[in-house]
Length: 494
Ligand code: GLN
Image 1: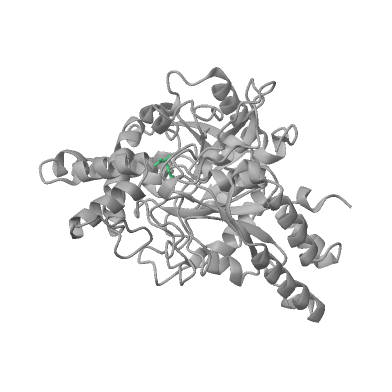
Image 2: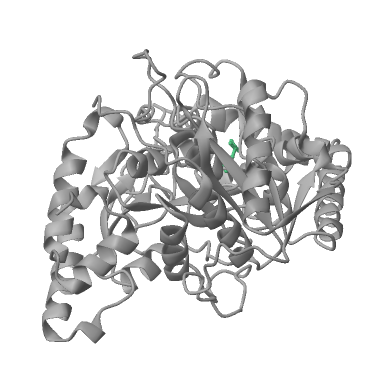
């Protein structure tokens, strides 16, 4: 029998049902692997007992009657630390929340639990999900299991869902939750050679997810295959009256609907995504992706998304604006950290708490956000950004009259080394150039592994779908997955 850690979620589910192994064996094997992976700094909190508890319930249900099993019975998962988990520390990667133990469970993690999944632990991330490299975390960066060929330098797994990406790539979780505000599922998936999908805004409830930018934040799965993403997303999604932006629509059976036959489908190639300075190997992979989709039956069509060049500046106004408002709640009174000042008053306490509790990137965002929302600059920045956002949405609406899905690269480069960009926020923000337009438009988008760069590091291809059409994204992702070379970690250094 192959090692449990080598199996996909679908294989684990089916193997467990057939009796190849018990759920307890799966959880135990994963708990051991998690314990032996501290060098990656992927898990902030380990919960082996929760993985075992769910496994025991799955084994008992199976012993009674196999039809009492749930979709994810027997599957242990990793949880990004942005999801509130009842009684389990939820820090959002910040000193500010410290060891906050929520008395409630987020809807998405509750949905996964209700579907039978166990939890292996809480996964490291950029502080409050702000970042592209996992270096803004208060608990130290995640180290990617990948290394450049012939080098021992530590590489970023991307961010902000870097712990999730590293855990899936290193096989210390068969799948993990992520969140994506402006690329945080897709960019780390691309950097670590795995798959990840951000669904349509509103598909997954935001209730119980620590807020970053509420009009953009969306949860989604990260896993080794497209099928695994479909399985997880089905369990995570669904209407939730506790989130006023949750979509009241049934959850499609995405796994059943999987088909890599793209006959009759048109794939849009946006002219404006050809950006000066993009490495030739990224362009070459993009061309290759078009050929793979053509081979699957799709017809490539050139499309135009004329406002693309404004997406990044628009995002970096709207996201900080919403963040500055959302993060106002961390005042030392209601949550986590409280720094008292000898002889000081309430304002001194606020100031000391926020100075001490937030890291540099979070402070930068709060300052930018406060500035663009200030009375004198509101119209010049925030109102204008909202208008441009509407134009970006309109671009996509028009484009989807000509095509069924859009193909682009996920990120403008492969993973970079730790420390290489941390002193240059603009270079860091540029990582999101291909990811943010779909976020601003609220559209489903996915990264799937496409190939490797000259140093042997993974590269991703990015599919954007029309509103509510996750199925087309998943199907095109599957078509690429079936044709792309399989990307294997060269070895284990940790
Ligand atoms: N890298 C982007 C940022 O720093 C996106 C983050 C995210 O999607 N959570 O804002």
